[in-house]
Image (cartoon, rainbow, N blue to C red; front, side, top):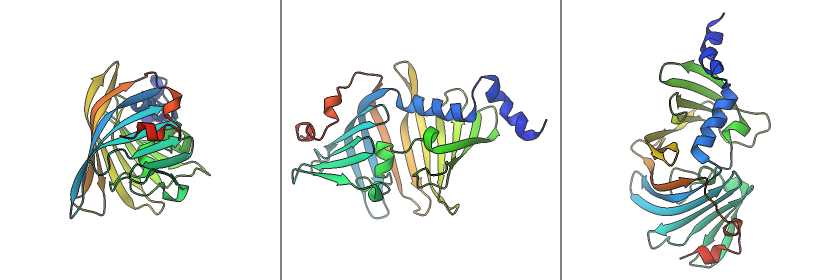
Length: 240
């Protein structure tokens, strides 16, 4: 039996294939639905800022994010329904649709993109995983895009903790193989019946000293969320 086959044995003994493992990780991070509050701290080379927001998420197709601080951005809403994404800007009382070409653009000046915040892509749907290495702590997965998948990353390397089945680190590469950014998952705590990382740190590769951090202040999973809040008609009512 070759070395590659031996590496696969520990996961397969538990009935988890690489594809099944990625699906489990996504389920642990997402749930059937979730809502909560986060603080985002953005550190750039010449400035820094802090954003507070509430969020609601239902399945993979519905997401709503409402900014509550600072006052200048208070009431801005990002809404995703299926593959469509809009921003509501209260200062001009307008709803602006975000074209697919802008999904890779920065969200609110952070290092996260519009795509990241509404999680348009799915690792289990859009990528094919394989086990790159394993040890007692967990495994390293290499994810490559499936043919025809509309994703921007050439590959993603994901380090998964064996005990929690949560990621500890994700490294994103361009189509040319350049390392672009690294996302760290820290401060794993219990919320309800599941474990969840309450501190996320995104570090761009080519911008030394810069980072964007997400601090989860509150999150609950598998709660009842009415479909009516995920609608263009409801956006002005949600604004502050």
